[in-house]
Length: 445
Image (cartoon, rainbow, N blue to C red; front, side, top):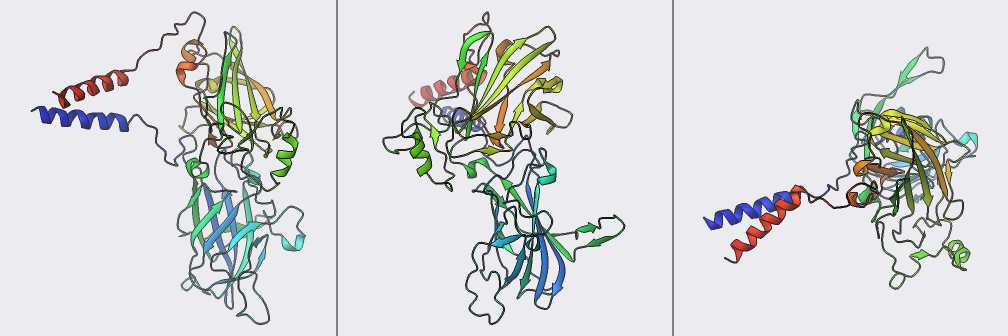
């Protein structure tokens, strides 16, 4: 009997512990349908292959692809080659020694394609190309959330029955983080002429869907959140070591002091093409900090000041954005120097907002330093659930450029002056403690 009870307690402890940890899947609850879709449209057949237009659509609500842009790769199914390209280029031509006369653009089995830069001559462009690989997010700027290139493929099939889809698609934007599924044949894309009086369609179309995982993209978090309020003198800093710990002994140069006399030389020697963060030495070691300050309380309204600070000496962030989840966003009255868009990932529940800088005013977040911050204030109208008690005025989640930021623990939030600072023990903690005690007693009885 005692053995059965012991096994039951062990099983229950395992079940509770499994349900007390956060899942590390790539699914994003604030953007459940967000993905990058690669559409491959065959628009004509050639004597030894076909001509196709490849379009990369960023269907992610708030995650964009920044400089140096996307890099797309795949593996050919047979011995295909790329004769020519418009609006993009292969980074490596490969071995084309078997060809005489006309030399292909790329002969590699696994080509790697990048976008052309702005200012490319018109005879090398197609529509939606030449953005340097930069794609804005769908909610922030849908007009610039897609990029295209055209390629002429040889040594390939010349009909819908003989053509073979590439496999093993990879997408870097600009680093790792995206996982692409297999290509799937879909209904051919229809193209509408400029006068909207005629429609044509692709001869064959397939799609590839790529999804993002922050855990694949970064070894550590990239941003954190600090909190403060007018009713409490305490400033709740980002959690210590939120994005890493200072370790200049075993990893010299992992951070730089803001007042270091060698700061300029260290930053300039890091190289323009180095995208590994070089951060200012802080307790949290995060490249980005988002500060939420409950500033004022009116009779029917309350005001918050949001400040985004860049601690990264190697990176400027253009077209940055933050996503904040708070129940009072359903009654947002005004944002003063940020653009705003409501996100409703849960249907009618309006508790998530996307905020970004105003064009040509504060849409460019400078590198770490005196100018490395942007800020704005937002005004909320109070609703029936409004309270300053128990940290209600602080956000539930914060994202910067699509990455989830580390929040302070709830018991560290600024409390009202008359609020009890005594920490409450959760029911789960009591149950776990009780079951652990029973397990110990039965094990050594």
